[in-house]
Length: 370
Ligand code: UD1
View 1: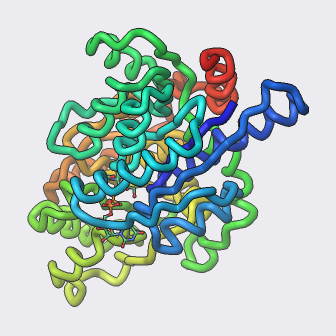
View 2: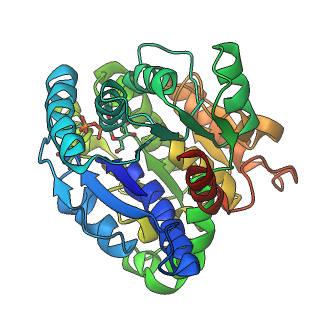
């Protein structure tokens, strides 16, 4: 069987690494038999900076993509259209038995459209998530992708319920969360390999960690300002706050021109590698973020999380107050941060599987694609 894996943005490299590893294990187990899966990686080039891209391939030991489409940045339509055209050419040449897409980025939608229009079986990893906010580009991408997928790999029961409400019931599988597989696999490695705590002169539990890159926050100066005022106050009143800055957010921070008034304990640093990020997250006192993946990783790591949005695709993380929605007003972020500081132990119930969702996904692909 030939499987084309389509990736392009940072979180997709992490998810695809889990599937690649599971494919390798499957092939080793099956020797030279006809059950082997040939994996072709297509990189759209949506993320191209070294520390948004190459670092992840190296660290996660993902095989070199056979195709790099070099699409790069641009407005949504232009970017998605360019990807669609180039992916279609690859799929026509490769004639795969299955095309796999991940998550909810423009790369996901372009890959899904290309496959569906060529009548190629389409598998969606991280299917069924909903924020119910159609202003988010990710919501459009995930809803459309789910509706044209043949195999839908859901990380949670909520995701399955969301699909059922939209009458998507065929080809739906609960496999658990591939990011949990990745977290378990890399957590110890991160502790051993990453020197980030030492480099930043931080100790366990002594700092907060934040990320901001969602278009609705990064591109909206008022919201970004609300967030930054809160970060500044937390740094001044509580502890150092470390902010690895996504390239989307950097120019708008500069436009805010806040730098002269910022507390020195608010530390803006370049984007981090996956192992550095896992290490920094696992040792943080509190995490503040608008990213879906980081909310979950905070939950996996047992670190309380303040979400800088009105809603989340991961409602399971809200149970027991482990993750809290603060939106972007300065006061609300500071209040929620204070509640997060007082969090106890994470509740026992765990919703994201057992860390074997990659293996489950590959087994299902093998049995469903004939
Ligand atoms: C994309 C995804 C988002 C995901 C995020 C992970 C969409 C609609 N959004 O958002 O769901 O959470 O990736 O990071 O697909 N840029 C660089 N270098 C890079 C990549 C981006 O400088 O390597 C800059 C460019 O100015 C670009 C901007 O960042 O215009 C935004 O990049 P883009 O890929 O459009 O979206 P992200 O915000 O990264």
